[in-house]
Image (tube, rainbow, N blue to C red; front, side, top):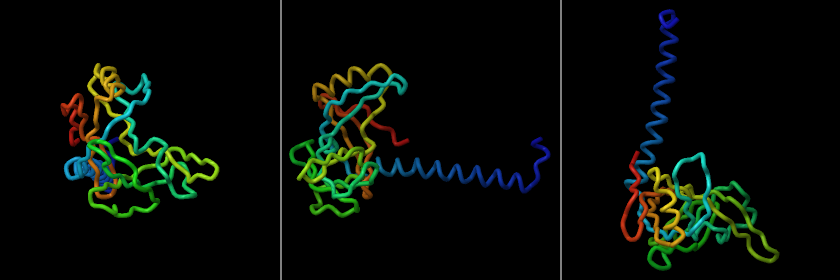
Length: 189
């Protein structure tokens, strides 16, 4: 069957393989660039109750700047892209300055802007809407057999997340800091 393919068929197969390779290389390059060149911030992690038997060992991470306390513009809906500006209130503690549907430069160069997706909008009578935001940094896969111990460290507030923030607001977990030691460094690819 393979011997019977025409030169046009071989050309089509080669083009498809090339396009798939370019797409995959672009994804890897984007991740490497973010982890290598992004601004590094360290954020306090708050406990979340994780359970999933099918995904392997991982730790669920929560952040104060994503947990239903983010004031969002009127009309914001679940699934909307949102840009949240943060400032460091104390070492490793980042708080929300503002949120916008548009990517705006931070008012202060020491602030950072994270791009996220609205997970849920809370609307109380006479109050501006607030939302829970997902940034894509809420779970972190760890070596087999270490997940439960790390979950306990999260509950004991002994874990910090080292985050890499790109110029576009995308964010990735670069490493975890456990009891003051930088561990579980994320490989670039």
